[in-house]
Image (cartoon, rainbow, N blue to C red):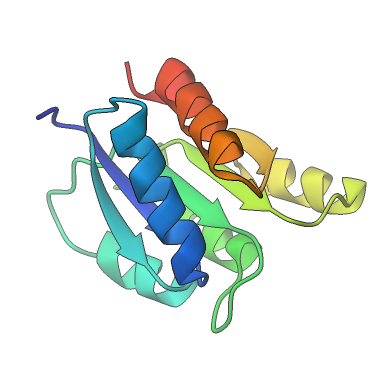
Length: 130
């Protein structure tokens, strides 16, 4: 098992399941820790001694959306440099721009099929989980 820890914040339990399965299917050695919303993610990030390799952040979530969570992540010096990939079903150019301005490293469309989830995880492996 790798030392890679991936935090996944998404309110859709099916999407969290498919991302977990895609990590296994793609042979990515990482521990994926799930949060159901941005507020839960931020509470987890407040823990000391984190060794998180990547954060996958859904845009549309209750309690705290992806942009709100991103603002808080960047305000926490001990986690501000962790790469964040935002996923969303919204194709809005305005949303892309806001996400990049907030500091995400990548903004990707939310997958709809298991093959697309595998493609997403393959890209994440290539770019962030070497």
